[in-house]
Image (cartoon, rainbow, N blue to C red; front, side, top):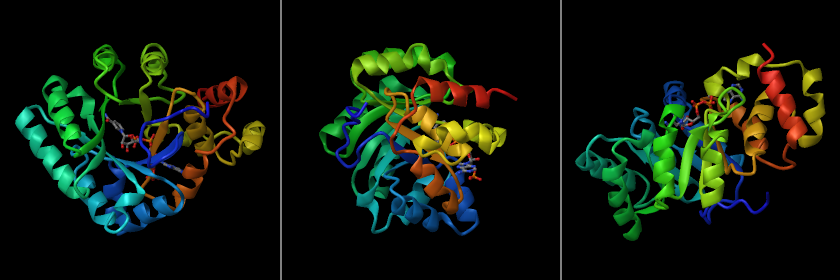
Length: 268
Ligand SMILES: NC(=O)c1ccc[n+]([C@@H]2O[C@H](COP(=O)([O-])OP(=O)(O)OC[C@H]3O[C@@H](n4cnc5c(N)ncnc54)[C@H](OP(=O)(O)O)[C@@H]3O)[C@@H](O)[C@H]2O)c1
């Protein structure tokens, strides 16, 4: 398990990253976006995921990384139906993040055949580090597997939590076989799983694993799969980041602890 490697020298994995879908803009609405990113860096979060699909999140992230850009891996996306628009998005992202995007993902596989050669050329020019692809729906996993099998991407980003486990069927085994990095979206089920909080007594067997809360149990559940590299938990609340980040450290759950979290998450 300690052999997990994402191919990004800036970070050692597995690790908790920060998602920005809706939450960075929510933090900004409360005047707390800079505090959110500064706190993330302070508690050891070293990867932030964003997209042109997330409203103003890309720009907000760029503004808040003023002076701290080198401390985080930026995972951005191309989300465009045409090559022309994809080129423009990449250009904006490169400008936002100091001339380089560490991981550029094809969002929801949109026009991936058009964008992939463009991203490969950008990587050859040093504008992009790694290339990846994302999808939120199991219905798209056959297409994602087809792209993975080309050997032309380095990472996939997929949903994985106790309520959404379809990736266990083909995507995780294939990623493992091909040596691809795996980023988890929705580790907290977009917040749904957070609200299924069990009693402290039910969580007691997880204490020896450093788990002091249900959110930590959920994050650690995903990262304890040895095929996983990054868990992208999103929050608009800086004060929640120490709790989330702490779940990214060993010891990892074994089969018994993972089974317990599954039972607790699906008990209601
Ligand atoms: N197709 C794609 O590429 C795709 C699709 C979906 C997601 N993603 C990526 O994956 C990231 C994560 O997914 P997600 O944002 O959908 O869902 P998530 O991380 O599973 O859940 C986020 C929710 O959990 C809550 N939360 C986080 N930490 C908490 C804590 N310590 N205590 C209580 N509540 C907590 C947040 O509320 P508060 O803000 O109130 O704390 C928010 O409502 C996204 O932000 C995005 O970067 C990518």
